[in-house]
Length: 385
Image (cartoon, rainbow, N blue to C red):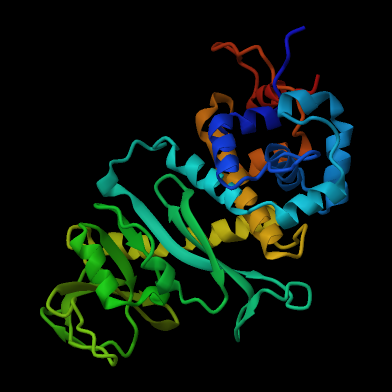
């Protein structure tokens, strides 16, 4: 009897097992692992993320209930929650970070957009942790936990890089470590205020769009041009030549474009950019789209159980976050690359996955002349057999 693939089997397809094993060997992840290999740990946590499991006990029960799918998922048998908990505590979380970054680096360009048209948003989000149960975390006036720093590809709506730091780490410190890609436009907030870093972006042939602080002094090089009732612009030059620590401001001799956006009931939004080709309206819209990365953070926290963790150690928390990002990338790949998913919204796909990870996929492609409704076609594609 021919095996029918399941939704979870289709989701896992893009993971290259040979590369996965090479990364595991790099960190000696399977060293002395008799009961649970890294692949089995990964599949179990992924099932928990996508299957809406809120505890190790639920993951254990899910794996046990679907014993007939163990072979096809690469599982050798049932997984005890104590064994999984031990793996989360001690198995190097960098295995799953590298798996995620390798998966992202080999993604196709969904929209077939040239490099010089790519738009990437940079931001960080706090992962709240109680110091009573996570004593290794850091605390500031606003954050108690760690920070997840991320670059989000707005063109393809997918993360391309991420990094963890303590709560006290400034965003700009991580921004300086991120690789700048020529021709790409980077959008970020005032947390990335560093004129010499802006100069580095400019020197590498990339663009940036950000906000200007109120106390940043500048010289006006042109009159204010009013484009409509909301947006106006002006060419400026930073006035500060040196910083308090004696460093020279390398961007002080270059012109910048200031875009003023009027907001009802609020003070105007002051943006700056080194992009003189896009219209002022386009620059204002780019900064508005920065909200998409906030929606991403909200999405993974709500849908992939990033608010409740399966372990208390730093290693367990980072492992779970890495696998959550992998889950998001795999769902996006399924949505973009599978014909039967292209018309289905991402929210609907994750709902289908949660309600039927082990649902059999139909092996019969729909007829081009099929006249039944989208709902009926949707039912046929995910029909339980």
